[in-house]
Image (cartoon, helix red, strand yellow):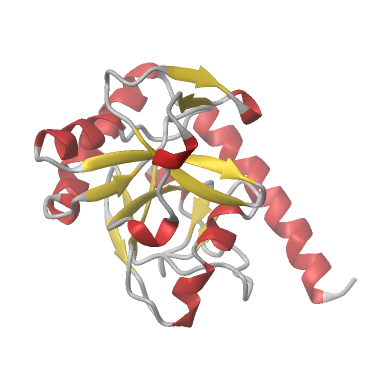
Length: 197
């Protein structure tokens, strides 16, 4: 088995393991984690004017409170929309009508012309399945974030990419590949892990 195929197998095993761990978290643990994340993450997004988040599913750590705080500070908040193999970002607030779309996820029901491109945002709160102490990320496997922010591999500094997760999603390695876009940091309900390397 070549190294890439071996890494794929290891990544699949790790992905299943970390997804299972997330699903074991109780509602009380999920609420506490979201509150702790809000406190740790808030200083990094206070001055951002256009922020992307997501709607948590399947045990993901919630960023709802962070997005509400950002809107209260005058920021535009957005949600990712799958567009072929990449992402666009739809502005939304608590009053935005939502509709269930691809993968059964809720999306803002707004005109496509209102969507923003990845490079138009200041900060992305990036969901993940697993991460390591160097702030490398493993996602769901679709590659949407890596393809959308591939320009960051060319030395671009913006937008800021903050991975967010439960501490239990930390792994010794995520079997990082060349196409994985580096995060600026990972923030969990317990710690902050700045980018290394």
